[in-house]
Image (cartoon, rainbow, N blue to C red; front, top):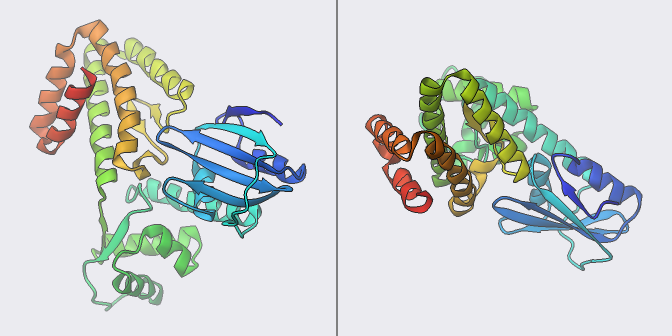
Length: 296
């Protein structure tokens, strides 16, 4: 068993299966930008999981959805805590359903943060199907219900759930409550994409492709929860992190990116793009000022 490694090279499910089959008693530490989690095994059985924000099975599910990070293995470190009751196969199935649901939402461009809470906008049930009524009633009854919780409660398959949810959303029956952490991610996304678009417009395709390669290497080397392709920044789960944890990633990433721009076009480049960005989106003022204060 490897003592440490990168989750981009070794799948967490494979690591867990090795520990299970070899009946190991140990602690598995998973570290990612913004936090860490611990998994404890007793004779190959996953018995306890914890992180700063979650405990038990929710920790495992979130880790199974995480695509980047580092792991460290500590043999014979055990615990008396018991917070995981489901088998790893059951947890993998739940995580797989979550992932399928998230991918379907991404294709429809409706939802990125499936931890987002819902609210009913129009409680009239006329012309709704029985399945749509069921979802709407659950949202009305549970004012703080999240998409993930609604998905688990209703018991629908991922594709059927997304279909019913989309119908309610597009017919203005329900809306999403945008959280502070998702809003913060949107600001970061807009900031990065605007700078890259301006860089592309004045630098051309070759220099932009070189920069994209440098950004991808930066993300991989530092196990950031980000993706960058075609001049756009993406994330599989970063917008689920608390704002202060997101900023740890943003400040590191932006310093590297803006330093690259400065070496080529000087710091006036970033200032010029920021001004243009604020002209089109004044709500970015607080984020932009935070960048100026902490990065420059």
